[in-house]
Amino acid sequence: MVSIGRDFKDAKALLAKLRASRSRKLSQYPIALPHGTTTLRGTPHLHKIKGWLNKLGHTDRDLDKLKVIHIAGTKGKGSTCAYIESMLLAHGARTGFPKRVGLYTSPHLIEYTERIRLNANPISETKFAENLFEIWDCLGDGPRSLQLLALLSFHTFIKEGVDVAIYEAHHGGEYDVTNVVNQPAVTATTTIGLDHIDELGPTIENIAWHKGGIFKTGAPALSSPQVLEVSKILKCRAAAKGTSLRFIQADLEDIPVPVQRVNASLAREACREFLYRQVGHILSEEDIQAGIRNFAWPGRFQTEQKNGVIWCLDGAHNPMSGLHTAAWFNSISHSR
Image (cartoon, rainbow, N blue to C red; front, side, top):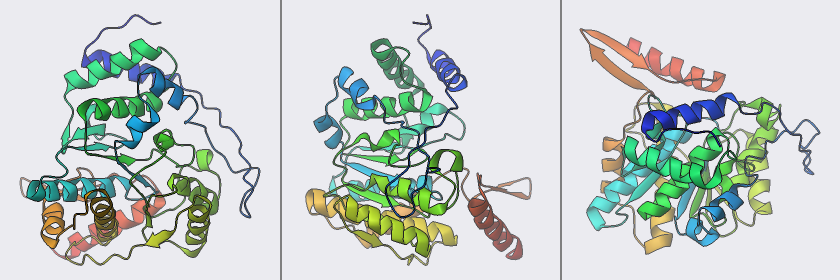
């Protein structure tokens, strides 16, 4: 085992080393569905994850007790997760539940600590390093960087005793390391398009197959509106997983950015399902509006004004995202 220090700087150095040395080789997984071909790819990020969690002392029951809201998709996963966090915190402030909300997202904008939040605040650098090295000491060189970060989130949320844990899947769904939870509270897919084709396959149907892998028996399955090819695959996946899929229309008209209306509407329904099924609570209009007001997700449709100049910031990284960003920028430009 490599000899390393113990502070946050050392934790970042370890993650950088693991990221640099990760394997680029992808596995092939032909799938026995009408759209399946020998070019349908999947990287088994779930490989060994349960064994590692058990070695850390975390059982399947511990994971189920996190009451995970699991979000997959191509566009808007992070925003949807952040809207869920904001609405649940607004409801908790009004009713007392949930008191502690965990959020795991990726990638981070500036610092690794942003990926793991407790009640909308990134965990401290001290806690990040302390928990990461607890895992490293126990498991050694096994996990790769993303696996280690996911393990860190589970380890942290279990230790902190959160009332709900909101999880953004990394790339896919079926083989994604975040898909280790057997009994999530709610599952949802945001808008699906072509992205990460080296890992997930060359067609939108292949990608939809992976994303639908987060659906589970007994957990409500929700989705943003999808193109026909995607909706067919998602319905098939939901049925195969023992649940039914409900598509959520974007009807929160007071949100100015159209794509964020889609994300917030999906988030609202995920919160409604979670609260009613867990504690019989109703998400009120007050909770929804407070959640929208308090929502903050830097680097996504963000504007900043400095020295009389308006800066428009967005982390679009694929053609689908780029189109939404361009439309948003044009709307801002034309309104000035």
